[in-house]
Length: 152
Image (cartoon, rainbow, N blue to C red; front, side, top):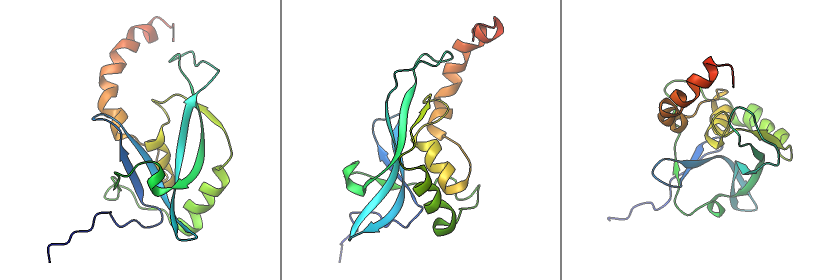
């Protein structure tokens, strides 16, 4: 009767994408419901007190469980690599990995570890970021000369 579903259907282990701007999104993995509330596991990011010599900026992060809509009302399911990699079993692999990672603090650089990397690592066991790969070709030329001069 012309009615459409306003929210995508999500299943445990699905990658949930929250668009932020035209270049970047925040990614999470659907964890399931607790007391009727849907939750996602996601990588939080804050500036770190330490510096990384290669990039000059480090981020301090941890895996956190939050209600699905707390991260944003606009989201979509984006299991972007289902055709390339096999999906790992949620209950025997992904959920225990999320539970194990919660509360651990990690320091990293955003180019080599971000929320998309974490989501694909949990779902597929592969660390991959399509959004970083799109901009990396523009960043790499800036570093090439410094690499050759052994300054990085």
